[in-house]
Length: 152
Image (cartoon, rainbow, N blue to C red; front, side, top):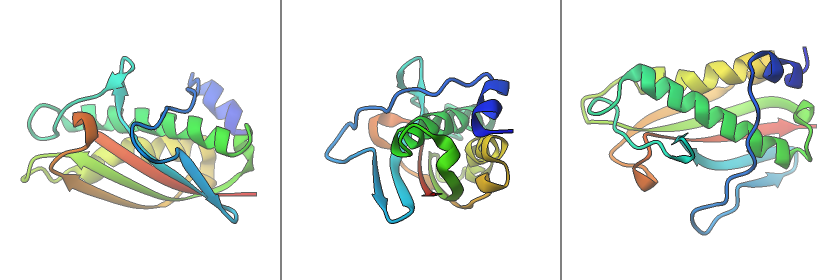
């Protein structure tokens, strides 16, 4: 199944690239690698504000991370000249989870993004990953994720 068949089967419509909130660009290409800037979780078009371990559950965090993966794929599509089938591999995902000091399920939150990337890209969606708990994320968002992809 192509990437677009998978997206259709999952009933996912990719959003347009979000306008950066500060002094950076949404993505940079160096050779065959695309580096996507961090994307924050959004709900109803606004930052999805919350802190894991205090105001949000792990399952809510997983849903937020899944939503971030959809946003990332929208940016990735633009970075690929409109064709996600150019993606050879999702190389690396780095996730920041706004969480309390005693919360330890950042990896489970990040699975929301990792599992969706695997569903959409198949073996090419299997990636290296880091998941960190942080004291705060811009705009109070619950999750921020950045991505590196190889394209052909």
